[in-house]
Length: 287
Image 1 (cartoon, rainbow, N blue to C red):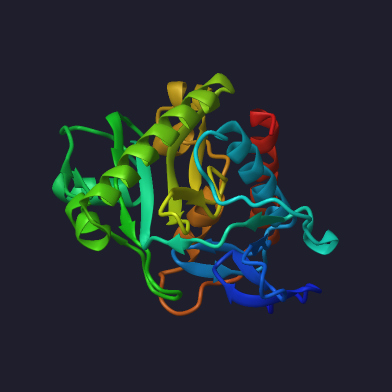
Image 2: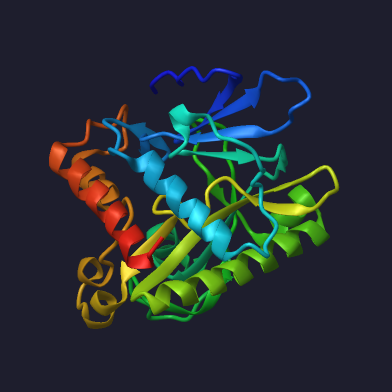
């Protein structure tokens, strides 16, 4: 992973797979500067090379969705963003982050499809028999995951496990808010000819205990977006799930890497096609 850049007035405190976090050098300023990089991750590994302009595109999309969902409490804070990272950074409140990835699935694919093939369930939730990869689910499902430390794999968990981790009241709030936000976002996407197949939210609590939507929201990295027309007429999973996200990267890795050792470098055409799909999603949404 490349070294985080130096930003005057800000001190680098943490780097995730894609984002770098900075704290103000002013001790009285508790805000966090969240800077999106061009790094791309898949299967819990950071890959190389990065995707050109990805950080700016993800930040633009997150800002657009935060604005569209402005009535949902979020982590954004007021203030001037340093010019050197203005296109790919957000100022955020300092939150106590919850260790849950709040995944909502409206369609079955990915790890959900893998589990369904084995047991007929997703995160322990029984599903009807006979579903195919890419099918719409009878209703959107809250299928949480435990956020693993850097370098380890996230783990799909049951709702009962969420209750054990954060308590019953907070677990119910995470589920209900996640499903509500997904429903609203899916309707907006549908108006643009897009399917929001699934997405992942992260939440934290502020000093008053208010639950706030944090990190990125409804981006090409945290969500699967498909072309609605292709899904309607597609006869194979690949034809149905014409994606506007990093599925191009996942598909290439699945063919060229056995998930042992370090992943190979991404070829130029995969990088370019992924960048083009990220840009096209923003154009389709009008973000």
